[in-house]
Amino acid sequence: KDASVCKNFLLGFCPFDKAALGGIQKLHLKVCSKIHSELIRDRFLQHADGAPESSLRLEYEEALMDDLEEALKKRDDFRKAEMERIKADPRLKELPEKAKERIAWLRKESAKVLKRAEEFAENAWPSGGNFTNMAYALRKESAEYLDEIDEITRSQTLKLKESFAFETCEVCGTGYLTEEEYQRHQGTRVHEGYQQVLDKLDELRKAQDKRGGGRKGKDRSRSRSRGKDPS
Image (cartoon, rainbow, N blue to C red; front, side, top):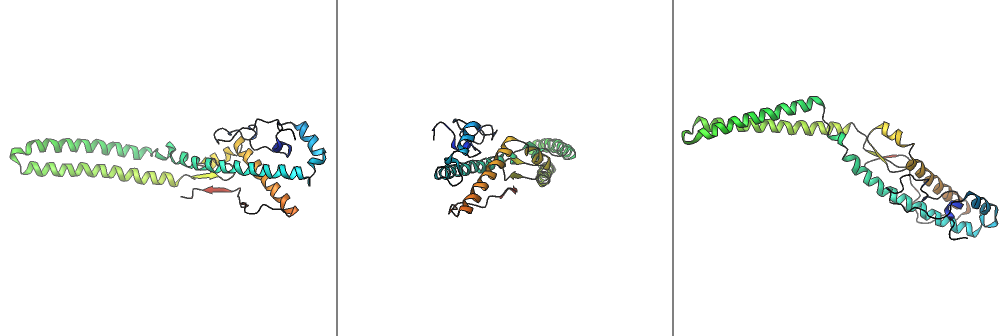
């Protein structure tokens, strides 16, 4: 009952333990400053207060579930930020070499033709006639080159986006663009820590159901699968 001792840790897991969630700062979670002692936990579990049906333990479990759900809310906020991060990933703007070469040529030709158009425009007055017509035609040709650049950029960017996953992990909220990134992130402390959060919450909910005292009105449908961007 010592206020300096972490009650969550006594029950097996503290979601605000920096050792559990390595990315606790970027998730904007408060860091638990209380004592995390395995020795104290062992004593608690051996004491009557640590028994499964103990009123004190049930009180601690309710508080832990609130903290676990708070951690999951922060994860959901983190997921939104991660989706924005991967949408701005530079790889989504890195066009293929052939496309970049074509765009460079088009820009060069557009500038060259536009320069000729300006030369004809300068000679259009006071002569007019063919000079004016040529200036107009060359400006149109220059604009067509630029339109092609826009179309190449649009179509190639769309192809790039379609080649990536654009997903966030439902366990920890981390965003990724490729299967390799997804597999790699599973070994991070943030992912492993949030898997513990989900496992502990599931354990406590099942224990409450077994006792017939489930928490009414609480969301019980959190998934552990991967999730696509809803937009």
